[in-house]
Length: 204
Image (tube, rainbow, N blue to C red; front, top):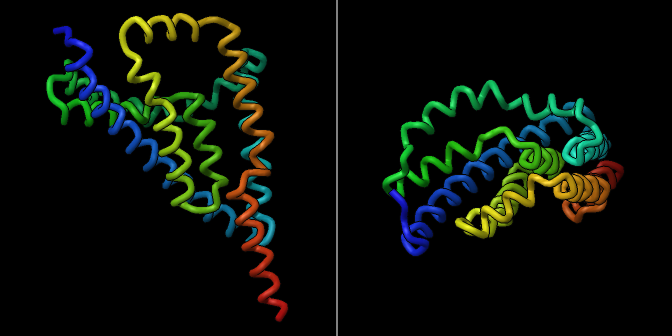
């Protein structure tokens, strides 16, 4: 049953809220894992090593999205085993008839394997804390709201444009640009200052 734009909007908002919650939880988990990796590698330079690794992976992902590195598609397959377990639960909420169903559907669909989502999770991995990792993914979720809410004709036009090779190249270049700027983001600089202060305290 088709709904008017006015009736569809609450369902899109509920779906988006569920998706953003999933993104935030994933970012929190990945950020927490990143902290553990830093301590395992080295409390002094482990964070820089993690940022370097995340930068290389994001550059590879950007090249893949642009169509210049097809072999990197294996990264998207990482989440397939988890998705195979989650996807059957999502079918229970189709067709979506209530707002709680829309929220639950978004909550599950937030775990769909996606290269762009993984690129932001790599950013969360080197965020420096579980809270910052969650914030990265929460911000990403909010940034996708216009595309989700732009349903109907506008969404169809956007979808048609996204299929064009030039759109994939633009997306890939954006991810590469994000990767190159990764070491210079404020949250990474803040972490480095904290490490320096810790080292200075040890010498006193």
